[in-house]
Image 1: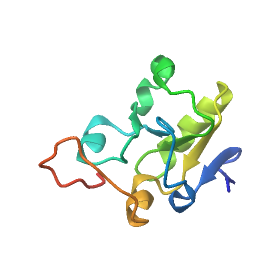
Image 2 (image 1 turned 90 degrees about the horizontal axis):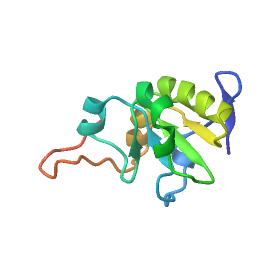
Image 3 (image 1 turned 180 degrees about the horizontal axis):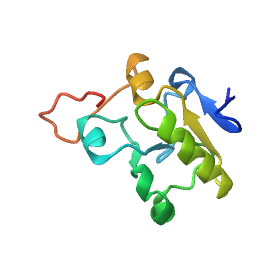
Length: 117
């Protein structure tokens, strides 16, 4: 299921992620404006630059999927988390790939039309 990406960082395509994820299994590391525009339902949001001081907010899950817009930032966070003891996998193509694969995207504002920023 996972393939190496950026050296030793395990990666997965959005289409390969189970449709039903356990609570907190998807970590979105995009900035606040990107999150507000649209995100995966049930994702945990911690911007990349806040991850080191917010490690205690990352849920304990068997498999943690890390996502950003296109896969670059999430690859770096995945490497960092794996070095810190998590079992993290980078979501290749990020939210762009997630949305293109037909996976759901939601916005916190019920009147907003969610999109990937």
